[in-house]
Length: 290
Image (cartoon, rainbow, N blue to C red):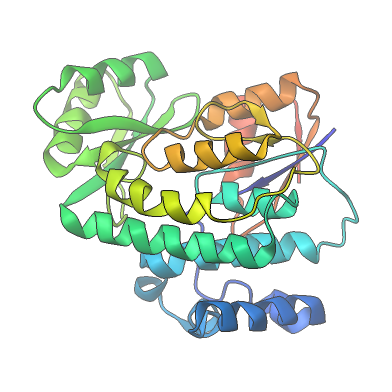
């Protein structure tokens, strides 16, 4: 069975999507449509912007979404997925490719999500850090042990790689404790704020109305959602999981394990970069990635 997967924020790079625009009339049509929907020239930033411009959450998220969805639409694989999943932001790409959302509605929701998260980031200084070389349980214990600051596991990316998220103090203290417990590395990430943590609650509340007022269809295949790593086809459940996703951890390791257990033998990543391919191989070295 074929699984399509889609990356999240952090996969962006200057020049992203230019090859698609130049080589495919269909891709060009979608990029032009995106500029009109967003009411600014996102293609110019994607194709010509520098890393600082691309790192702005309000730009990054729609840019990664566009690259992911359009690359899937114009792929020469001529394949349809049996199941889909996306890492954080990538879940919106997965929903569009699974026909649960239209391209237009998906892009509008991603833009609203990005703006809401940007505002939440500006409310309070916050950050994220990657913890390498510790198992999930130890990182969970470390975060739980810090009672007077906010720090939580945010991304269970693969065995031995977890991202934590929270206040500056909370993440710094958790990183030091991780090193004391034997972590190979604990490095702060260059991100705008504490994604997938309680500090994103204002963004979740702002996004809730937009999601609830957007029509969702029954997807053509199961969508494995971040909040619980389970396959979902019920439209209302998908909506609620998307709202919860902003403050809940991305359970990517368990998602891949569940997809493999349900029959996935080949994974295809669509979007900028190939980070997910590496993570998938670390979860299950036997599956095919492309």
